[in-house]
Image (tube, rainbow, N blue to C red; front, side, top):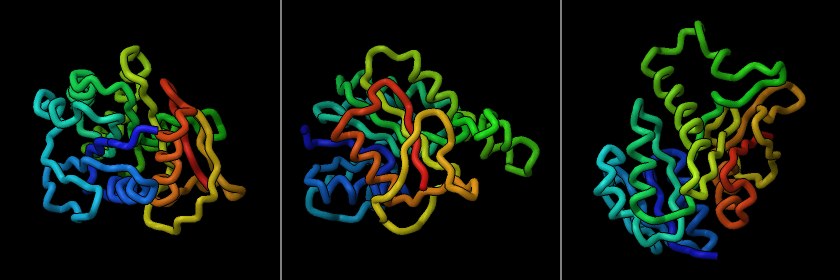
Length: 208
């Protein structure tokens, strides 16, 4: 397995956990963030400044890696620039930290529909919608070996248990109907996918 990974959004809550999981498994990480000084200095980590709104510059940073992982927040109308950077870099394997809004609940309703009219600010809804759009764009892509990894409906701090369930297009929920996952367990499953390649050119999801 190739071991040289470029991680976009490495300074974020999920990106930080992914970085740790990669390092623990012997990967080296080019940790890309708008403010690389926020990235903890560790053996195996090379902090680099990068902006997904500047695809030409970002492509040069990504070039030569064995895989690219994006854990960057969704920004309205930014997905094309991000994918352009990955394509220009020549790196084929691309994993994206996705959103849960494009999943379907147990009633067959897209999670996105349940978010309407519940007081979520418009700017937040716009960024969530961009996550759905990013997935739609990837589904049309034939040039990258992409994977879109949707988290559980609720993702946040928690234990690293290594015990979770995976799914495809439907929310993974427990017996109480709750769909949750910790950042740490999400990171485990994402690096598992990097190593195993079980969901190339498809989406999968996770939950307890």
